[in-house]
Image (tube, rainbow, N blue to C red; front, side, top):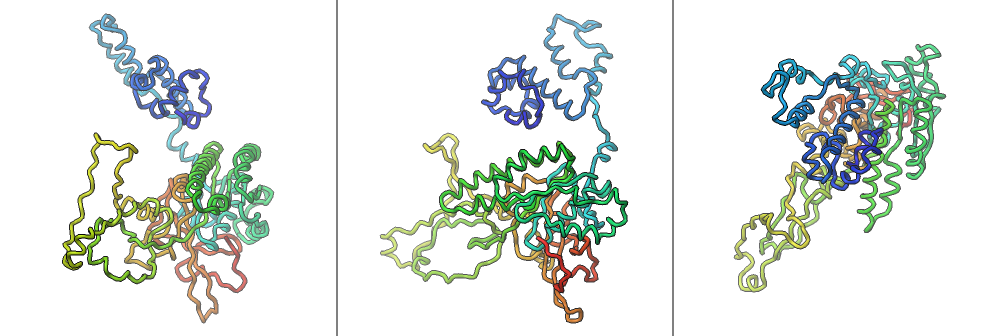
Amino acid sequence: MTDLLRVLPHFPVGQFARLIPVLEKHAVSTSDLLSLEAADIGKRTRLPLLDVKRLCSAVLDALHSELGVSTTVPRPRQQAKAGSEAGPGLEGPNGGGRAAPEQFDAEHTPASSLGGTAASLSAQWQTISTLDGELDRALGGGIPAGYVTEVTGESGAGKTQFLLTLLLSAQLPPPHGLGRPALYISTEAPLSTRRLTQMLSANPLFQRLPPSQRPSLDNIISTVTPDLESQDHILTFQVPVEVERRGIGLLVVDSVAANYRAEFERSGGSQHGSNMGVRTAELVKLGMHLRDLAQRHNLAVVVSNQVADRFSSGSSSSGITPSFQTPASSLHRLPPQPQPPRQTQESPLATRSRAPPQPQLPPSSSVSSSLPSSSLPQQPPPPPPLFNPDETDNNNTLPQQPSHPALLLDHQQRWFTGWGDEPSSSPSLAAGPLKTPSLGLVWTTQVAGRIALFRRPAAYTYQQGKGGWRRWMKVVFASHVAGTGPGLEGAVEFEVWMGGLRSTSASGMGVESGDGNETKEG
C-alpha cells in the first residue's frame, strides 16, 4: 500500500486514514486493491468489508479520472453484487427473480469509453531530432519525450557532442524538436558555449530558419554539481521549479555516474557492501524522480553514463561446474602453472551472482597411507541434497543450489549492456574491448532506453596521410523502437564535424583525422 501516493499522488487519503496503516502493515498494494476481491482483503487485514469496498471503488474511480476514462453506466460487477445481496424474496420486474432482457443488455453495455483515440495518442508523440536522418531513423524518430534515455560509451566516443546537439534541436519547432528551452546539468565540466556557437554557425539547418525560430544560447540553462549532495539538492528542489517556470522540454545530466562513483566506490574494505546498498537505494530514488519529471511535464530526460572494463576471471564464462571431490592422485601433483587471463563476459556485478564452489574433501589419512595414490578409486560425486519443507534448521536458511548458466548475470548482461552480444563466428562485428555501463543492473532498470556509442581506430592511409577514429551509434534497448542488432550489425556510423553529428556512407567517409580539424568530445 506504500505505492498509493506514487500511483495516485492526489488521492484523498484523509478519508481513509483508519484503513491506510492497517493496509501498510499487511503489505496490501494498489494492484491488490484492484485485482483481489474485497472479501479476501477483509480476511487478510481484518477490516470491515464495506470500508474495503469503498476504498477499492475510490481507487478505481481515481484511476479512471487520471487516465481520462469516463464511466457512463453502472459497472456489471456492482450490479451483480447488488442483485445477489437483494435476497431470494426480491424478484425482477417481470417476476421469477430474473432480470428483464432490457436490464441484461444494459448490464453488458461497455461501462466506459477511453478519453483518447489512436490518432490523438499518435499526435501527442514528440521526439527530439539528432539533425541527421540516419541517426533519427535508428532511434525511431529521435529521443522521445516523457521517457528517460541513457547515452553510454567510452571516453572520446562522442557522448557530449550528442548531448550538445540535443540542446539545440530541442528548441526547434516540431517535428525536429519541442519548441521549448533545455536544462543542462554537468557533473564534470561546465557547458561548452564555444562549441554550441560553432554548431549554430556551421549547421545548414539552423541557417535556413528564420531568426525567430533559430535556437539560441539564451534558451539553455546550465549548472554544475561537483558533488552528490549538490546534485541531489538541485534535482530534487530546484529542477522542478525551473521546469514549471520556464517550460523546460529537455533535461540533460552529464554524467549521472561521476558523483556516485566518487562517493560510494572510493572507500573499500568491510564497508563496501553497505555502500553498495545505500547506492542502490539512491539510484532507485533518482530514477523514480526523473521518470516522474518526464511523465508529468512531458519532457525528455537524457543522461550520459560512463563505462568500465570487464576483467577476466579464472572461472569459465559459460557457467559454473562445482567439483564435489578431488582424486587423490591430484594431491601429489605440482601446482599448475599460471595461465594468461582470458577475456570473458565477466563483470564485477556478475561475480556476486555466481554461487561459491563447494569445498573439496580430501581422503582420510588411513586410506591414503595404506594404498598408493594411483590405486585409490575415484568416487562419483554425491547427489545434491534434497530440500525437505518439513525440516527447518535453526537459522531458517535454504540449501543454496547452483544457478543455471543461462540465468547468471555473466550471460544475461550481454543483452542490455551493448557489448558482447555479437556471435563468436563474426569477430568483425565486435564493438571493441568489452565494456560495462557504470552503476550496474540497478540503474539499467531505471531507464527506458539505452544508446551505446563506439569508436575504433581507423586504418592509416598513406595516400591521404591521415588516420583517425570511426564511430558508431547503436540502440541497445528502447521502449519505442527495436534494437539495432548484435555487435555493430545495424549500427549507424557517424562522424563529429563542426555542425554536430552526421552519418557517413560506406565509401569510407567518417574517418576523423588528427590534423587539427577534429573536435574534442567526451
